[in-house]
Image (cartoon, rainbow, N blue to C red; front, side, top):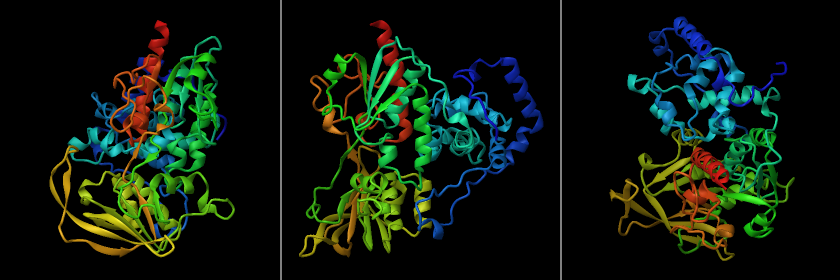
Length: 499
C-alpha cells in the first residue's frame, strides 16, 4: 500500500451532506435490506487451541478486507441506531461501517477517531456484546448483531500497521494552558488526546517505565499485542501529548510542585493497583499471588522470557485461579501457557453469573481450562518450607440476590474438602491505587478508597482536579474508563475557559 494521508480531525463530520447521502443511497440500491438480513455474521479466524496454548501470540487473527466488507454489508444503516447509544464514547458506528462498505477505510478510521483514540485496543478488549452490539437493531430481527468490535479492530490494524496513518500532525498551541494527566491508562490517554486536539499543552506522568497503565501490565499479549499498544500510544503522542515515564506523582513531585511549574488543571487516572485478597489463612505462602502481581510479572517484567529477562515466571503444575472476571480468565490462560499441567478456575457463583466476557470464557474452555463453580477457598495449605501445597475449599449454593442483583453464595455446612495446588492466583478485584490520592488534602474519597466525582463532569471535591477510570470505579472496563476521560476532557476545557 502506498502512503495514505490522514485527514484532519473532524473532516468526515464536515463532508457534504449531499455527498454522504448520495453514496449511502448507492449502497442501499446495491444490496437491499432483505439481502443484508440474509448475510451471516462473519467469524473471526483464530489460532487453533492446541497451537495457541503453547505461545503468547494473539488468539484472534483479524478480518481480511473481503471479510470486513462482507460484515459491513450487514449493517442496516438505521435511522435510530441503538449501537451509538450503547457506546460509552459515542462513536458514530453506522457511518464508520458504511465507510468500510464503500472501501473508504481512511475515512472510517477518522470517523472512529473523532471520539476514540484507541480503536485497535477497543476492538480487542471492549465488551461490545453488552454495549454497542447488544443494542444493534438486527437483534430485534432475531439476527446476530453486526460485529462492531471486529470491524473497529480491522480498520485500525489495516491502516495503522500498514501506513503512516498511525500518526498525525500535532495541534498543540504553545500559548495554551498546561494540563497534567497522572497515569497513562485508557482514561488518561483519552483525556490527554481530547485536550491536545483542543490545543492544550498536555503532559502525562506515568509511574512505570513504559506507558499504557493496565493495558501494558494487566492484559496478556495473546489478547493485546504490544505492537498494537505501542502504535496507539504513538498516535496519542503525535497529537502533541508528552508522556513522562518513571515519574511518580506523590513521590517524584507533588501536585503542589506541578502547580508551581504552571499546570492549571489535573486529571487523576492512577488506576486500581491495590489488589484484593480474601483474608484467609495461608495467603502469605510462597506460591500465592494476587492477579496484579502475577500478570505484571509476566506482561510487564517479561517473566515469560526468563532467563533472558531477570524476572522468573511464577509457575506451577497445578494452578488455581480464584475469580470469575476477565482478569481471572487472563490469569488462568497465562498459567496454562507457562506450563501448568492443570489450570482451574474456582468461582463462587455459577457460570451464568460470571462477569467475564463470553468470548474469553469460550476461549478458556477450548484451551482445556477446568471450571469449578460454587466453590471458594477458606484456607491455603503449606509445606514445611512455607510453600503452597494445597487449599481447603467449601461448597456453596445460591441464595437470594445481593446488592449486585446476582444470587448470593451461601456456604454449605460441613462441605469442606482439600485439593492439591502449587500455584494460586487471587483475582477477586482490586481497589484504587492509594499512593497519590490519599495524600491530597481535601480530596473526598469513597468507602473503597476511590475518588468521589460528579459523574457528569468527573470533577472532584477540589477545583481543577478531575478523575476517572479505575481510580474512581475500582476495576472496570477499558471503554468505561475512556468514557470517563472524554467527559473529563470536556469539563476541563469549560473550567479553563472560565478562569
